[in-house]
Every structure is written in structure tokens, then in C-alpha cells.
Length: 411
Image (tube, rainbow, N blue to C red; front, side):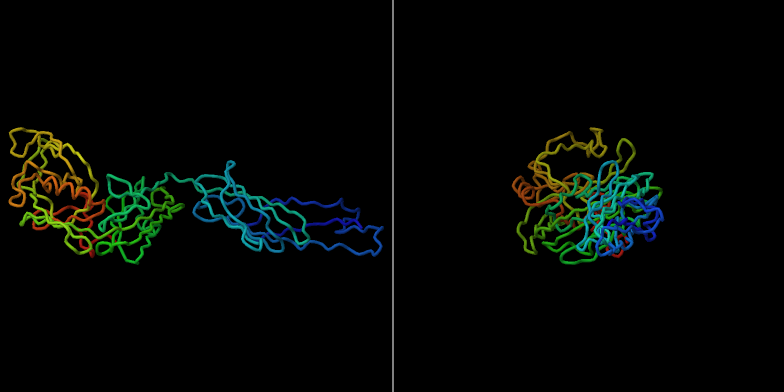
């Protein structure tokens, strides 16, 4: 018996408009749904296919689709063999779920692309069926790529180890005007769990920290799920992720009155060093700016380390040799930076008043041996607390986050 198989495809909602490719024998003159093979001894009929019901999301012909949403293909009364979703020859990742009734994308879509969805299936009789549809993703005015920073001088090393004062820092390449949308897209998971707050340092950079310094050994995972998220003024986000770990709990305490810097690791003092901090006073630079010469008060965060750093009064605008705060360029060794304005812990073999008086231009002067110990043992993110100084570190001068009381820290 020869029978013509008619495959009836009905689609649900998003499947409308999909083209069907199938096979059948030539139709009979009467237009019936089957043909009888007179040679068939029993005169029995072959079973007809149950109509396939296919659903595709995004719907066929959809435009302005968010690339942050997955592509889902599901079938009833049939079985999925494979699904491809591709634009310009580049397919996104995805897989057919066990049972062969659902396919879901696992890779991201891109902005401003037209994607073709091709689903290969078997109907209820085992006949192959293929269907296709297309959709187009939204094209933003601009895309804000994302980087993770340890501070403004260094990127955050994924998998790296940092000190207890290291905030999470997410940097967007474009201005973010919808900060609530950006914050919602940032997921921070910590072990042990701890609550925290966001603080926008600029319109492109947001920090996040807990109420107190991190506990030693804390594991921190950061995911930014901003692909397809409108960040304001036509700017859309991207996806990014990182993770890092907090090492031992190191806090150095520099007392402006006692001229001592004491280092504590996990609550135990491991080093007591004679020091000399900023001499104080003010001057006006050539461009009219007023600068002071105290070491800033409050918690500082270690930003980086340089074995040799060239220092001069010109770095903060003092170029007049008659100015009492003027000094010529000089190579200084074992420099551990704690602010953007140029505060370091460093070797100062010329300073004969370590432990006795404050004579620096704002840095924390140490002996050669102590400066080397600091350089060798402190890491980015460690805390250096300066106490009893009349000028406070601003939140933007390095990582001054910990100088802001938690109840007034961001959102």
C-alpha cells in the first residue's frame, strides 16, 4: 500500500509564521488525505501523523529583542533532534534537554543581530520535519563594557588574594544614569555571607563593601548580568564576572602622636616600627591650589607597591625653590602607596627623627629595614589606619570608603 502522509503543523503563539519542510507522495485526484495501495493484502491504512505543536521564543519576526533573554524552543507531539540559533554564521551555544521536547540557549546573544532559528524534529510517525524563523536583537546607542578594578591604578586579578579593606569595584565604560538598574544587575555572593552597600564614586564607577572589614578567608564572587539592561540614555550593559579571596587580616595602625606604626595580623601585633608622618601646614601652588602637609587621617587601603618611585614637590604643584615645602626630584625606595595624592609608606634614611617627630611632606617615613618589611608583607587591599591627624582622607583619594560611616555609605 502506498499512502500519502500529510504532516499538519500547528504552532502556538510564538511559532506563527514558521516555514515547514516535509515529504509526501503525490496526492490523489480526489484530494483525499490518503491513497490506498490495491496490492495491499489486508487493505489496512498507515497511521497519520499527530500534528506537531512547536513554540519558539522569541517569536518569529520579533524585533528589539533583549540579548539577555534565552532562546527557548519546545515541541509537543514530536521530538527535537537539534536546534541552531545563528547570526552571520556564528551560532550560540545551547542544548536539547533530556526527553527531546525542549531546547534552551546557554550562550549569550549579541546586540543588533538578526538570528535564524532552525529546529530539526521528528513527527509522531518518525518523519523528519524542519522549521525556521528569525528575530532581531535590539541595537543600543552605546554599550557599557565592564571591568573590575582593585583600584584606579590596577585591575582586579580574578582568583587573586586581597586584604580585608578591598572593596568590590565595578567600572562601566560609559556613563550610567540609571544607577538602580545597574545595581540590580550586580550580584555579589560572599562566603561567609555578609550584607553590603553600593557607593557611586563617579557616574561610571561603583564600589560595594560590607559594614566592617572583611573577615579573613572570605570568598567573594561578583556577577554583572547587564546584557540587555538599559542603563539610561540609550546605553546598555554587558555581562562580566570575577572572583577573589580575602587573605589574612592585616591592619597597620600609624599614630600621628606617638610616631609609631604597629602591624596586626589576625589581631596579633607582629611589628612595631618608629615612623615620622606629615609635618603639617599649608601652601599655595603656582596654579592657586591650596595643599596641606599632614598625613591624612583614617583608614587607607594599600593600592600598589613600587621598589623605586621618583618623588618631588612638583608632583603636588610646588615648583618655587624658595617655598619651604619645595624639594627636588629624588628616587625613594620600598614604596607602598596608600592614596592617589601620593601618600606612601617608604624608606627615609635621611629622616633622623623617626619615632620622635613628624617631618615628612605627608608620607609615612620608615627605616630601610621596616620599609622593606612593609613592602614584602603588605598586599593590595590591606588597611593602614592613620590616627590623630587633623585632616581626613577623602573617599575619592585612593580607597577612602572606610572613612565613610556605613549608615551614610551609598545605598
